[in-house]
Image 1: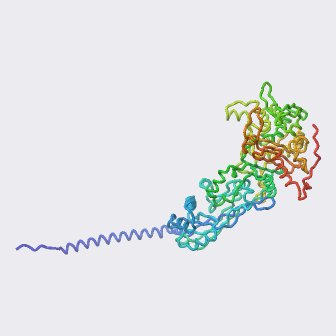
Image 2: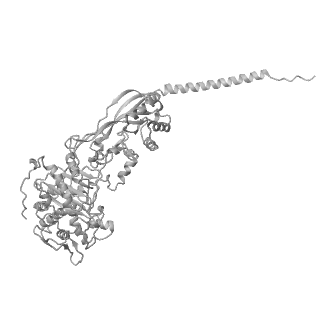
Image 3: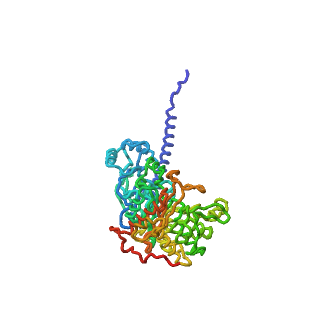
Length: 629
C-alpha cells in the first residue's frame, strides 16, 4: 500500500519563521541603534551647531537702505529730493511658482507681456536670499487695492513703501545734476554687496554719478524673526541707516533759467563761471530731457525717442560737445605771442584781406575780404582780424603755440567734479605723426592760430580759458559742488598758474577784448551800446563744413545743420570780473550777432538789480583805460 504524500511540513515552516523573525529583529535592533546613535550625534555631539543653524533659519538680517542725500542750488532751492512711493516687490523664496505668480500679477493689474518680460529680467538680477526685489514702481491706489484683494493668490508678493529719487525742476538740470537709475548687472559686479544691500538705484550721470559715495549713505540692518513661510513675526534688533550727505551746488537756479531763456530753444550750450572761486553759476545744454523718466526705468519707446532724436537731447554739449573754437581763442594766442616776444603791442601787420606764406601762392582769407589795412594787436582783437593771427601763429610755430594753449587747459580735462568731461584736442607735431603718420605743415599752424583745423574744445574749456583771462592766469578748476555736507570740495591736483614775463600783457589783451564790445569798430559793438557795464569779450565762428578756396560762405546754399556755429566768450564787469561766460549756438552763424546777445542776457541776470542798475558789490574797481604799452 503506497505511503501518503505529506502536503506541508509544519515543523520546517515554524523553524523558517523563527529564523526570519530573529534576523528581522536583529536588523530592526541594529537600525534602531543606528537611529539612536544618529540622534545622539545630532542632538548631543552637534547640539551647538544645529542650534545655531536653526536660529539662523528663524532669524534673518534684513538691510535697511539709507535715504539718498539731497541736492540744492546755491540759494537752497531743492534740485534733487526723495519722495515716498509704493513699489511692488517679490521675494523668490516665498513664492511657490515664480512664473505663475508673475502671470497672475499681469492679469490682476491689466499689464502687457512686455511688462512681464521686464519683471522677469529684474528678478534675474543678483540679490541676497530672502531679499525682496522691486519689479514695479509708483503704484496707483487702484493697483494697490487690486493686489490687496488678491493677496491670498500672491505668496511672496508685497507692496512696499520707499523713497524714490525725484527731480522737481525736471529737465533744467538734467545735464549737470544727472540722474539715478536701477543698478544693472555690470554695476552689480563692481559694487560692494554689503554697502548696497537693499539699494536698487545708483547715480548714472552728472553730480549724481560723480558724488555717488557721498550721496549714497550707509546701509542699516534689522534682525527679524520669521516663520516657515518667511513672513516677519517680530523685529529683534535694529541698526538705523545713515543718510547720504547733502550737496549744495554752486549753480544758481534763477541764472540757469535766464540762460535757458536767452538760448530761446536753440541747440547750444552756455557755461557761466565765477572767476574768483571757480564755481559754476549756470550750465545749460539744450535741448535737454526729463531725468525723472530714468529713475524707475524708462520705457523702450521713450528711450528710443530720446536716443534717435536728431537734436540729441541726451548729449551733454557742455562737457562732451567738441567744436572748433574759432576766433574765441585769439586772446589766448595773443598772450602767447606777447609772452614769447614774437610781437609787441605796437607790432603791425598789413591786411589786404588775406595772408600768404613766403613762397606760397595759397591765400588764407580774412573774414573781412576787403581787409583792415595796417593792424596792431589791439585792433586785431577788436576786429577779430584773421590775417594778424595767421602771421602771429606763423611766428610762434606749432610747438610754442601748442605749449601755451595747453596752459589754458585745451586738450585736457579742466573740471574738478564733472563726470564724463571730454579732453578735446590740442594738436601737435607728435600727435599728427602718431595718428596720421604725417609731418606737420606750416599752413596747419596758421589756421590753428584762429581756432580752426584740428583743434577741438568743449564749451567748458572755453569758459575756463575766459576765467583765466579774467583771473590774469590764476588757475582754479571749475566745479559744481559748493559744499558737501557743509564742507567745500578740495582740489587735490591743482593746475599751475600761468605766469607771464610781463604781467601787463594781461591788461593789454583785456583792453583789446573790451574794444570788441565797446569799440566803435568792435565786432560786437551793438551789444556794448546797450550795456551799463563794460564787457571784455571775443566772438567766434566755427565751420561745420569746409568752404573751397576762393568761395564765399552762402547760407542759402547750406542745410540749416551745415551752417556755422556761433560762439562768444567774455567776462564782466571788465575791471572787476564777477562772471565769465562761454556761449555756443549750434548753426547760429554769427558769434557777434547771435551768441553775444545771449552772453549779455546772462551777465545782466547776474550783475543787475531789479531796476536794471549794476549791483553795488559789482562796481568796477578802476576806469577802463587803454593800458600803456
